Image (cartoon, rainbow, N blue to C red; front, side, top):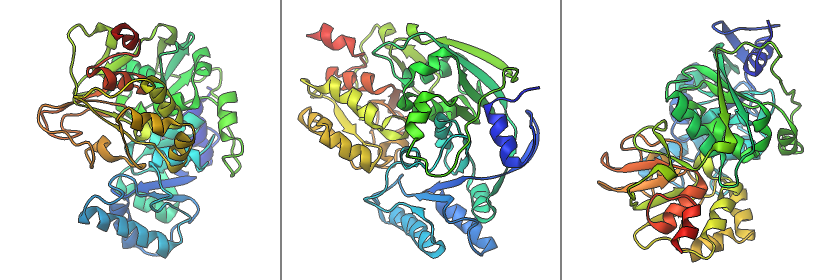
Length: 423
């Protein structure tokens, strides 16, 4: 029986001819990742063993969640990571001024690529499936052991085939695709399963779309999300990924436990209502206006250059509603710089947005944009759990950058086409 993309990567890294769902295997790792929250406990576990890391070029330490340090405790966490990186000679440690959001900069810097196996002590490590790799989140203990050994164990996941077809409408982004999928199968619909994206509709998706979709595989309970290697992938990784890589493709007789079909040509902008990413509704179905207090555009899900371009194009000639605060967070220094050169930052500032340095910030309620009781936020982040961005009575509505920008302008949850109607 043939193998799917995830099985092929796992088999290769386990040194086996083939693997199939349910098997327990041990694999060699290409990249091990931790941030300022998860690295300290991983380092503590590593220190119980002592010695040197397995490969100082295959570990990435990215202080991005509470950085620049928001308080004394967060400064202490960052120092633990900084000291460990210096002690161990970690090549891929990113200090302030060089750092960005981890799941933005690892693909951007070419540290992850086709056919590679990556684990990270962060649930959204599944992002790198966009470039045809297998990547998944683990706990800090597993991460600490991986830094010492370069290995991790896996149960080979079953795979759900997500078959995409149709042409992508101009007002649709990858965020609408993944929120639609989560709405269809639920937040546990892919529990410990691989989401493998196939079909002619894949070619309609930009790399930004794919990174967003893979990033949120975990919001459906997925072990990972993975895309095939095609011309879009090749154009992205060429000259970026310096290590040798070997793409994978699913065999014609690969086994899937379920197939879900999505006609992307029929999608309209959607939002995920509180308090689950699966509580998805088309914006057009909202009959009673939902006023908002805040908008966040950024995060590891939608903080890339294309996301900012989409938002900036909507903000041109408009201003943030006087009752709304809008925070824009570029995902990396490179994104920030290019957005500045292209005039996007001017557009945001002229529209009365707050523009931040690259950081996770409000996504996890870390700092900036924390909401008080009863406030509502439209956010391009990936989770809208109760209390995620502040007071437990506050509400987060997840959306793509086009919907977030339109909502900031109109002061209520809105799709871009409503701006024309409002004139």
